[in-house]
Length: 567
Image (cartoon, rainbow, N blue to C red):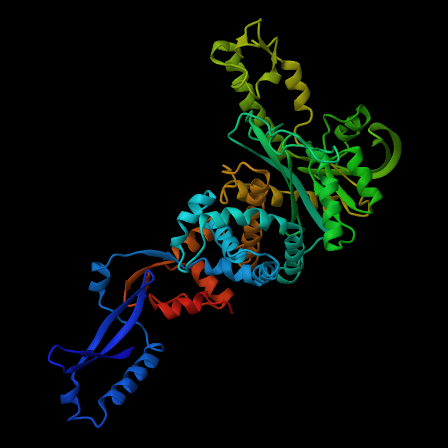
């Protein structure tokens, strides 16, 4: 508030108390009190100018400590413009992890006008709150309370630069997470997934100056979405609590079996890790991966296919000597032979000691029967109505039908006396409810091995969050650097979400947290006053855990800036 002096046409000076503020960046003034003409006020006050300047200063100081009171009619008649303030929670974690300080150091060595920190904050927070393309994210940057002042061109230009910081930032995050959430790397969960692109061609391989072939990134391979499209693979490494500690991106046609060793070697070197027990599904259970973990003094806990095992293992696994009703377990410690690859030839044999655990669950048996029955229902329908199916729509049922073939040209079913493969169904039923897990951690109890393996759901849940809440695809990028930068931003967003869930003691789902953050927005009323109209148990938890005051219905601009201020 200040004292305004306005000269009238007849030469007299009129005094008013005025409040100055900005609306959408434009300076505005609101008249608070009309005081009168200066020559008349001089009859009452020795020095009206000094007197009312002091009053303006006093009222300004008082207003900062008083609750905001406004006429509700102002709210109803105003044009309400929503601004998100809830992202302060994400920003708090971003600052706790020191990402801003890391980027500020990198900024000193780069001759660019835009700020890496501002761009990464916008891209990361938007990936969590309203995932979209880079262009759409930049166009919608006005939904946040603070200004993000950089161009779309600068945003695109920054992607390759941000990607060049990846290794250093991953190392920085690991150190910060070790303090923030107390990482537990005694066990690490690893798995892979892939993402398809809406294109019909593979990326070409390139050759560098030394005649080394660099494979293209987007390649057709086995897609978990069963789409005949080029893919990009992602390997993700989590700590024992489910906190991301590393990741990598690889061409879509690369077998996931080959991805464990590089990412684990990188993580151990980058973070100076000691022994790590890797937990993964049977897709990673290969001779080479077993030998690698043994040789590097790591542990492993892998699931094992009973159906695909040798006859001796099958007979042992299915023999009726399991203990404990309804949840039967047995194990053995045994040497077994593996053949590993050397000089591009699988001809080196070695022996390893392994603990093999088999357990049976009636619940899992019923689930397997139910899943198979759904597929058999489709198979029976295909046999009865072959003309309504083709190669693409027959997926799943194909393995249960005898004499089934498809036209090479059209993909249509060629009806050749189709029948259900009853022998295969009977053979599969033998294995219902049986699971096998193998490990080199022979000192672990059977129950510990099973419990540790069951924790693999944490990585499955992380992939679910990436694909649903963070909407990692569709991917609106075409160059390799930009594609990899996109996944880098998604990874950072996942880290922040997982830290938030840890801080809040996993009391709310990811979707519920994101919804609450999005809903904690405000509307501009007038004279730098904003109205908040959302409150919930999650917001109350944010207040308590992050030492924030989010309870007021009305806030002045200065109050909101104070909430968003780094502390």
